[in-house]
Every structure is written in C-alpha cells, then in structure tokens.
Length: 121
Image (cartoon, rainbow, N blue to C red; front, side, top):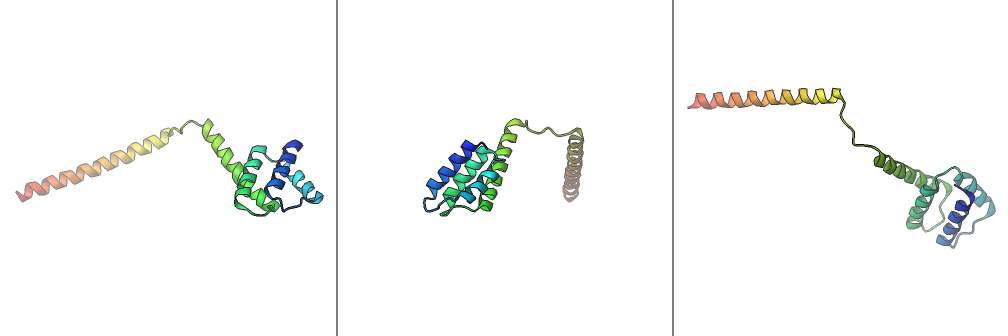
C-alpha cells in the first residue's frame, strides 16, 4: 500500500470507531505492516471489520480479515482467467472404462431378468 492509501484507511477507521484514539506508536505499527499489503484487500477487510465489530480491531483481527479477503479476491481473479478444465486423456479413458463396465453389468442384469421371465412362463 502507498502511504496516502494507508492514511486514508486509518482516517476512515477513526471515523468508523470514533471512541478510539489512534496513538502514534499504534499508527506507526499499522503503517509498517500495511505497506506490504494489497490495497483492495485491506479496504475490503476494513469494511468487514466495521460491519462486525464495535471496537477498533487488534492488528491480528485486521490481519485475519485481510488474509480472508485476499484469498477471496485472488480466487475470484483466478476464476476469471481460467478456462473450464478439460479432462486429460487418462481421465477420459478411465471414464470410458467405467462406463463400459457399467453397461456390461446392466446388460447382464437385463439378460438375467429375461431368462427368469422366460423360465416362469
């Protein structure tokens, strides 16, 4: 994150939790740790924390919310770029083998039923 994004985030958090006084040592800790994080995921995590917490979050709560949001955003991004997976030739062969086996079993069952019906009449 850039410093201006961090300042904006901390200001928004101060508005969301007006009873909290952000002390300089705490602000320094947050700034140091936020620099290596994704801006989008941090702001999304902060929104979640604002919605579910009455009190200023601990750093560990923010980190946990950030990680969850980062995973969610990364997964969404990956899903956008990935074509639907095509089965490998080995998987196709295995599926054909299972299908043929099931067809043989069904045919054998039907043949057995026909023989029993013929024997009963």
